[in-house]
Length: 252
Image (cartoon, rainbow, N blue to C red; front, side, top):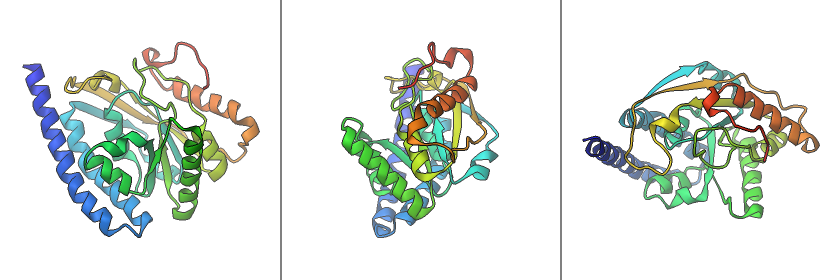
């Protein structure tokens, strides 16, 4: 019965995403000349569709200090990444005027991926270092031109066991390039809700989302990146329960 229920929920959620994303693609094509407008329309879309998807996923979400998102923006919002649930949490929480940074593979997903590609948000080629660096420069340029925030998962990929992984350097380079504060957003127990490498195994889960105090980056330099990345990693780790903290604190 659980598998039947899970399959039904997955199909309903998929139909909701595909149908609404199809409409969004049409709107984005009309707005193609105006990147700032496309970014904001997609933010509104995320705020609208995500609550239903989180309900479909059986995610009971509690927010702590959510007001810090609005009081801190524009900012670089960094979050841990353990499950597909995180994607819809990010869509819901990313402020209007915020750009996401995702791997290029998402563009292959029918309608949803196409909408992301047209959205004005950024796609990064993680397999090609030069293209990834160029993509990050594009993010910094977009931030300055459109006065937007950035939402990024600095671990680079989902954690298999829910524990915080080492952080990649991209977010820190963006902080140096833009001067924006870094705001960690910590998600707990999402890995229990929609485990990695599963499709329909939704588990009813109480998920806590905690927005931490912004970290000032005005004094950050490329020469001191390692220590600043370690500072952010430590702040993120300290906000997680013991079973989601890294076994060994390290920086990629």
